[in-house]
Amino acid sequence: MAKKRKRRIRWNIGMIVFLVIFIYVMINIVSFFIKKKLTVYRVTKDEMTTTFSFTGIALRDEKLLKASQNGYITYYVEEGKRVRKSGTLYILDKDGKVQETFADQAEALRGKGETLDDEEIQKKVTEFQSIYSDGSFSDVYDLKYDLKNTILNLNEDSMKEVIDAVSKKLGEDAFHTETSPASGAAAFYSDSFDGKTADDITDADFDQENYRAVRYNSSDQVKKGNVVCRVTNSENWTIVVPLEKSQYDFLQDKDSVTVKFQSDQEKTTADLKVKKKGNSYFGYLSLDDYVVRYLDERYLDIDITLDSHEGLKIPNSAVVKKKFYQVPAEYISKGNDGKEEGFSVRTTDDKGEVKVEQKNFTIYKKTKKYCYLDPEEVGEDVVLQSMDSDDTYLVEKTKTLEGVYCTNQGYADFRLIEKTAQKDDYCIVEENTDHGISLYDFIVLDSSTIKENQIIY
Image (tube, rainbow, N blue to C red):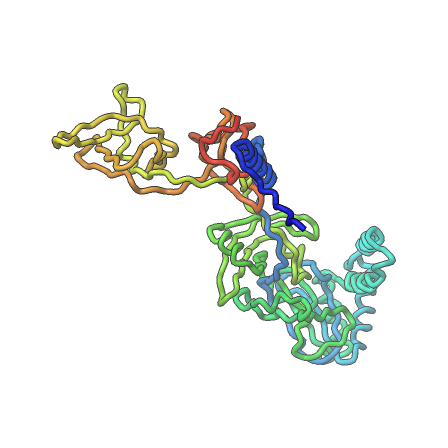
């Protein structure tokens, strides 16, 4: 049998041209799908407020009072209320029987109008009814102790009268009376922060699972040496917050901030200091009001708000960096009319003759010390002549500035921006800057999809 001959492909110019065109079309199709699309963004106006949320530790300027003996305690001032210096805070007796005698003497004074009237008690019951729910039935016990302290709360003259009467009946050694060492608000609890200062706070203190607190009410049994009452010395107090490295860097140059308490949305201003301790960072907020409002809270959820910034909103993806020549401002000269700013360019020809020519390079940005010029416009090896002296300056030092590509004219026109604030996705820039952008300008959303001066349409 005869062998079959293989057919050979005969190439001609037509097939080659077709193959080239086919490959070109395929390359363009593939590049179309993988290439980043050019998207235009319209500049709008916005406001940015930088806010940090923290759980802070409240430390107050206060006096700690410890039980002088074992026994039962009875408070004669309502928790959270102010007491004057040397005013009676509580009594301690060993078996609790003295409390009954004190209560009898206090009741005897009610008819004289020297104790709190029923309106105060009715007010507390009404306030409790307005916030009560079945899911928080345990709050009833707090109301019970609150009413008990209110009923026992006497004015100081009446208190002295009661103490004198009980002393005559049972003897001075039957109980111990504690008076306030300062004029301030009283609170009845002890916790793991007793005696600590702001400098003593560590990262471990912010773990609330390790927090221990003991709260006291009238008729509770207490042990000698335990802290059973605290009285504020002043309105000054401090909230310590843990910081991340980025927050520490951001807040370093801030002297004061706005603090908002999340529990009731109350706002105030606080002085701020930040400190690095080992590998940890802390912020210290100094306040001079609201100490009584949050007297019984050790951990506070707060927001720190910095100044608001209003301006043009720019997506961070649109920002592009460009190098500019940095020229000392003293080399700026005036034109013939004395108004237009320019530069005296010094050149030397092959014969050694020096020539100074006035050129009006575009000044994109100007500060007190420097002005910034586009290298593409100025060129290389340019020497400037000072108008006030024989000094010269070789233009070569550069600095990177930020901007965006404006598309208003149909091509990628670089425009400078001056950031005032920045977040993860966008920034706020100043309005009405030289060679900058304006409201409702169109810019390239992703600066990586185009090059400067590239024609769009």
